Length: 94
Image 1: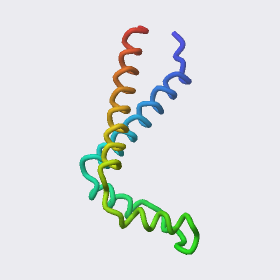
Image 2: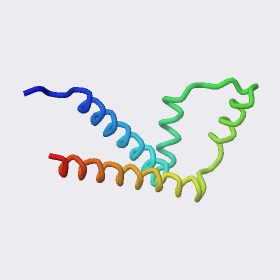
Image 3: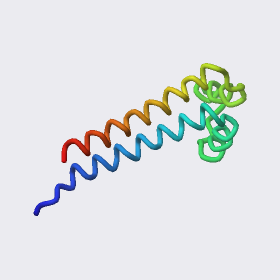
């Protein structure tokens, strides 16, 4: 029996990517303070004299609003839908 590793690697990468999007969306929607703390620990420190650095600095100190939380909810639900359809496709293809 020959095992195809290219499909397995793609499946594993897709699952990891969908889980990362789901966790990011859940944090953005339900726990914005935790998301901000994680972003402070992980995120790079940008040059504040450049336009991108100024934009990121303003976004960091801004309070998370309704649209940010709705965007997080959309990310979370999209990741859940992607995983459900992916596992449904795996079970039907066997």
